[in-house]
Length: 129
Image (cartoon, rainbow, N blue to C red; front, side, top):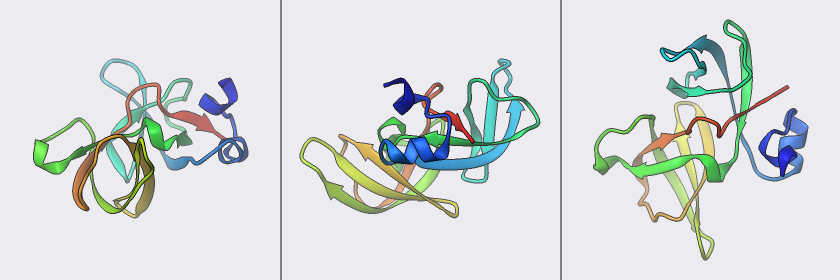
């Protein structure tokens, strides 16, 4: 469980299941937390253990990304486009385009193709080498 949640390396993250990777600059947020700002997530992703000023890569599991329809207004995240959906019984797997990246997102919520909001909650992202 610990290695799944905090894999430490890209190899370990991919070995233990599907994972999304984002690379960006680490800055200090208004509340003092480290925030990774990537072109795909300009609002930033809270990252524990990162040093300010460094470039870092994070791993985020598909089940840890929150996904909401764009019609529900604005959300604390970034806008993406649902490109594809697959029903897996108790959840859906989505392919979502955010900027130039394509992310795998798992959700129990059924969404149509098109605009959507994505959010990576604090603690969901793990630093990887």
